[in-house]
Image (cartoon, rainbow, N blue to C red; front, top):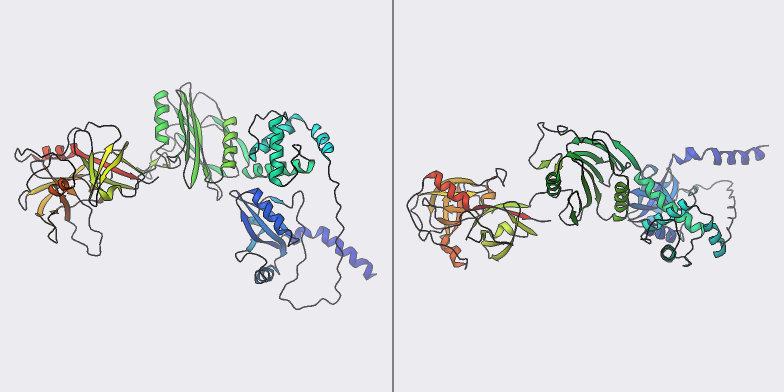
Length: 576
C-alpha cells in the first residue's frame, strides 16, 4: 500500500507544491549583457554546458544569463563548487528572484526547476531513485510553403505589428503599412541572417513568435501608458514603469525616475507668443538635462532640441498654438538609443494638448529653497571655472590668466560671446571673439609704477557673475617686486576672491599697472591680504600689443570704479 501511495504523493507535491518551492529558490547570475540579442547568444552558448540556463530582463536595458533555480539550502555550496571548477566567471553571484524581470530564455518556455545536491555534503541516500526525463517532442520543421501560408493568414494589424518589431530591431525603415513588399522582405531576410536562420525573406511561425515576444517584452518593461495632465492641459503617453509624478514647477510638470535607468519626463505648459517660444528655446539649452551637443531646429511656431553627452541623451519638443506653448522633454540614459527612440516616437504620436489654459504660473513659485542655479526645479548647466579678464583694444580682444582657460573645451565672455585663445604663455592668454566687439573702453597701461603704499584698485567678478557687474576692491601697492625679488611681479595688499583672477589692477589715475594672478595654492599659505599681479612691462614683453596711458592725475573713487568696470569682463571656461 505504501508503495502505491508514495509515487502519487510525489507527483502531487511536484504539481501543487511548486509555488511554495519557488519562494525558497534563487539563481546564480553568471553574465549581464547590454542588449537582448547578445544575451540570447550567451544563453545559447552556456546551454551547451549546462541544462538549467535561463535568461531574465534586469532593467535599465540589461539582460542577465543565470543558472537555476536552486534551493536556498544548497545554492551557496553550488556557487563555490562551480567557481572552484572554473565552470563560471569568478564574479558570478546569487541573484534573488525579486531582482529578475521578464524571462527571455529559453525562448517560448519556462525554465524548469532542477533538484540540486549540496556539493560538500557526503550524505548518500539509502535508496536513490532516478526518474528518467521524458523524451521531448520534436516539433516538425515548418516548410517555406507552410510559412507563407501561415503568414497569409495574418491580419493587417498583425502585419503592421511585425513591421514595428522589425523596425525596433533596426532592420526595417519604411512605412508601417501592413504591406509586405520588397522592403519588408529584405528586412525579414536581414533579421534571419542576424539570428542565424536561413535568409528566405519569409519568417516562420517560430521566428515570428520569437521576434514578437522579444518586442512585447521590451514594451512591457517600459509600461507605456497614456496620461491626462489636467493642470497642464496635456494628454500624452509616457513610460509609466520608469517615471512617476513628482511636482509642479511652472512651466514644467516633473516626472522623476523610479528605477536605476534615471529616465525623466517634463511636460511644458505656459502662455506666450513667438518671442516667448524663442525665449524658451534659449532657456532650455542652459539646462543640464539638455547637453550642448546635439541637433537643434526652430521654426516660427515650434522647436526641437536633441542633447547628448556621455551620461544622458534628451529630446525636447514645444509648439506654440493659440497663445499657449506646450510640449515635453524626455531624458534617457546614454547608450540605450533604441528604447529611447521608441519612447520618443510614442510620445510624439500621442502628444495632444487640450484646453484654452496653461499650467498656473504660481505653481512651485517661491519658497525658502530657491537657488540661483536652479530654473523651475531644474539644474542650470554652468561653467567649470569662472574668472575675470579685461579688454586690450577697441576690437574687443581680452586678456586673462593662462589658468583661466586651461583645459577648456569652450570659452565665453560676458555670458554668451564665444571666444578663441589667440595667444597663450605660462602667465597670460589673449582671447579673440569670433566677430569683432565694440567695448565701451579698453585698457590703457601705465609706463611707470606708482609709489609704494599708494592706493590701487583690482576689478573682477568676485561672485562669479551673480551680481551681473564687476566688483572693485581697493588696497595698496605693497612692493614693486615679488617675494623672491621677481622683477615681473608686484605685491599688493588687498582681499580678492578666486574669480577676480585675470582682472585688471589700476593705479589712482585709472592706468592699468598689471593683471591679477591667482592666489598661491602651495604648501606655504600667505596672509589673506597678500596678492600678486603680473606688471604692465611683463605683459608688453610677451608680444601682446598694449596702449600706453596718458596720465591726467588721480581719479575720484567713483570715476576709477567706472573706468575699471568698463574694461572688465567675465571669463567662463566650459568642459562639455
